[in-house]
Length: 221
Image (cartoon, rainbow, N blue to C red):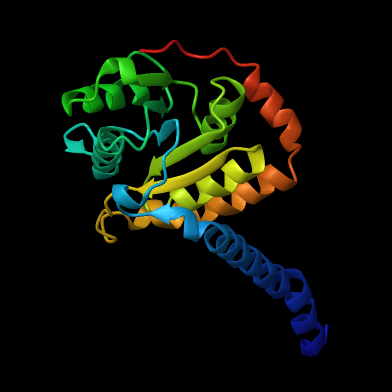
């Protein structure tokens, strides 16, 4: 086979698909960040009032002996938010797979240790994904106006999803974890944004939301 033809086949089968994939990843990230950044706030005083703060879950530890700074910062930001009076209630949404791993239980414990009354906290331990948390906030708990609390790299995707599921939202970003320490989750978030676009626009989103809303809710704490 002539060398020129080999190069042409390689371009069409390898180079071009790779370039299109990279372009799709970049465009998804630019779309999500660009369309939501004006509703992201770094300080509580800039946040508009809403009935509830939606605290998105993460693991308490990154290893048996190492605390997760993302967890600590989210809990601290949520505590500051409700103490400021900007929200009346915190909906803590995370993943629970057993009595040994329960993000909502750990976040509630952290919040109460910071002086947040348990009566002001609602638990949703079926928030396995950000899409689940936002969809259930509306369809299960009835909240249509929320302040999302999460990391600086995560809140844009959460707001993007909120727009799609019909939840009015702004976001309070928690204190930034050093970028060297958080580089792996930041890289992962770039691809999570791509998955969000695919989930919301290509993978039968109506059926997904119906399945989420049919899942039983957790009881208030």
